[in-house]
Amino acid sequence: MLLHGIEAGVNLLAACNRVVATAIFALLTGVVALQVFTRFVLHAPVIWSEEAARFLFFWVVLLGAAMSVKDRRHFVIDVLGGRVGGGPRLRFLFDLVPDACVLAFSVLLLVEGIGYTQVGLFRTGTNSQVNMALVYAAIPTFAALSIVYSALNLLLDWAAFRQGRGPAPRRPQSAD
Image 1 (cartoon, helix red, strand yellow):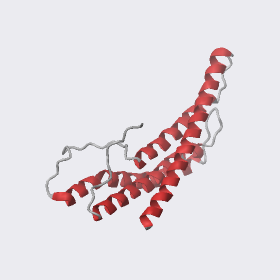
Image 2 (cartoon, rainbow, N blue to C red):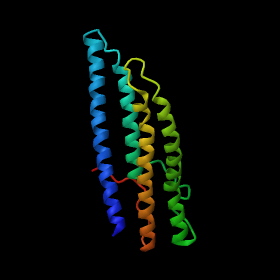
Image 3 (tube, one colour):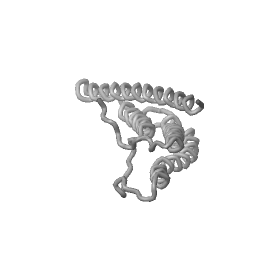
Image 4 (cartoon, rainbow, N blue to C red):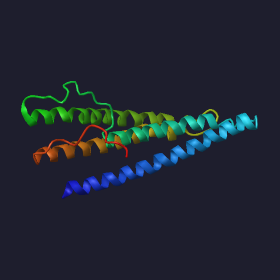
């Protein structure tokens, strides 16, 4: 079925997302360890390390946030306590709202993030001399990933509704 193919492709994208986020986190850890070692042991700090750590942290946070969208671990408040009268159609509509909001916000963030990244083409980091477009590119990257992930969540909910099942679980599963 087409939906299974789409889901497999998105799962591959999510696996790449996790690998890249893990690699950046390892690099962040190395840069911070270098910063601590040079500052407190050698008493000769590497000037670019603090700025590079901030930039890497920014990327890790946004890639992790995208993974949270995929896994539906983003912040949702169920003000009705799961009790919605009016049948499964109304419940389905209420369950669509969080993913639809994330999708709409992500589209807006993608457009604005691309513009922000273009502005970054003409700026460099003060100490590291890193082109800021590389740093700002985390914003549209997060937005694009979130668009794909929330669109898949909406498709899966729609397929479940059409088959008479409820939407995919919203509560995080235990990390066993």
